[in-house]
Every structure is written in C-alpha cells, then in structure tokens.
Image (cartoon, rainbow, N blue to C red; front, side):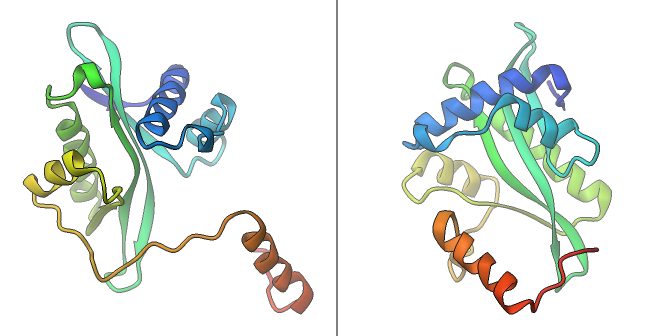
Amino acid sequence: MIRAATPGDVPEIHAMVRELADYEREPDSARATTQQFHDALFGPDPAVFALIAEDDTLGAPVGFALWFRNFSTWTGTHGVYLEDLYVRPHARGGGHGKALLAGLAAICVERGYERFEWSVLDWNEPSLAFYRAMGARPQDEWTVQRLTGEPLRALAEQARVNKATSLSN
C-alpha cells in the first residue's frame, strides 16, 4: 500500500534515510535530524513531501519516496523532483519501489505536471536497470552541479559585498 506520510512516520523516514546513506557509501553525510524532517514535511509551510510504502501483511513502512516540486521555464509547469527513493532490502522485489514511482507519476498527471525527474548514482546498476525498464531515460547531456560548504558561503558573501541582490519578497 502507498500512502502519504504522516507526522508519525518521521522516525521511520529518518531511519530509512540513514539506511540509504549507508547503501550509497555516505553514512557520515546524512546529518539531518528527525526534527528537521518533521519541520520540512509538516511545518507551517512544507516544501517537501513523502509517500510511504507499507507491507500489507506487516502494516509497517518498508520504503519511502521524498519529493518536492520543481518548475520548468520551458513548459511553464511544475514537475516532481524525487530526492530519495528507498525500499528496505527485505522488501525489495515486492513491487514497492514501482508503486512509489507510480504514485508520484499519478501526482504529476493529476496536477498537470509535465516532468518527473531524479538522479541516480552511476554505479547503481540495479536501480538504473529498474528505471530504464519503466521507460526512464538518462539526461546524459546534463550534469549536476553543486555548491556546499566554503564555496557556497564565499559565493553568498559576494551578494552581501556587491549589494546587488535584494532577497526579500
């Protein structure tokens, strides 16, 4: 069964994110707290959303999909960006991952969103094969760029120094 996450799911989401970080060989990078997940998902102005996959026999969460809306200036519509998809090892092969993706695809279609996108590590062959079997295609001409830590702070300082940016709405 796929359902929208509730506040009571936050500890399980947090635990599964830690499991995902271990799988992706980055256990020390997953620093988010349960409180941060709660605030992001269920605070006064949530900008992140989650679906939960439950095992029908156990009634327990076995996977999740955490997503947010993005926007295409070319289509003039929102889309869904899947930040994380995870199914616990004991539940893999049971259709939970595909059901989570189908739930997100349904959100796209129901809301008129034209794109459903995500990133996957290039070494994760099982996931790549799984996504391709559903019709997903890599966007090989695009590469992800990221600023973090000191480079992020240094660039932000340029806005303050130049006073060229008004950031209030």
